Image 1: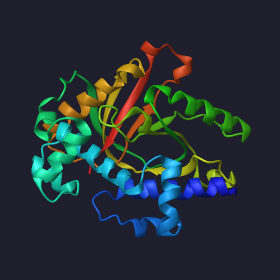
Image 2: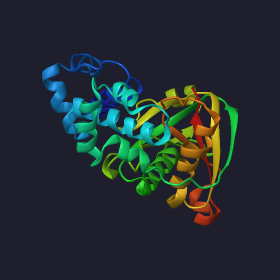
Image 3: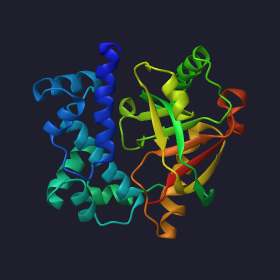
Length: 273
């Protein structure tokens, strides 16, 4: 394994840990130890690879999650502030206004109107996938799929099953150059292990099984955000459920390159807690 691959993978491990432990105390010393760097070097390596300081990254994810909860949840602003790590409503409001340009209460009132959707609740199996991380505008994530297809052809990986995407961030909340997305193909863990050393950006991931709310999006990816809003902002709140703090799963029922944009079918899946 090259030094570049090893360092990227070690920082990716920290990024994943932060994403799944936002409700916990996240100390720089702990994160440096997780990455296998001294604290002195860790800060510089993390910034060099991600473009952000480690605690700036933590604060950004917590504020962006708070924005999503204000838009799509029913918790009070005070509760959202506390869960974002702020000890007072005032401190949260200052940080939120600095990030989004308006107070939390104003932001909540701007919830966009939701369109009608075709949705259901159903059980989904656990899925093992080979994932390729992409960071940038969602409309350009097809580059990741092109890279994945090339890698699959080179390693003789069959692409018989439908592809999956993991969307970690809300483009209405997160800056376009920081949006995170994983292009995923289902693959048996033994088959992934047999690939040996993976290039930078690739990893083995598990998409949890369980109860999911599933909405069917008809048409172009350019309008898929409307389905997200309808599912998360209208259909689910009326059912009084809680959501797992995980990325949204996109399941592509028709290969994007093989059908016209208006004929694409994509399932949007959100796991229930």
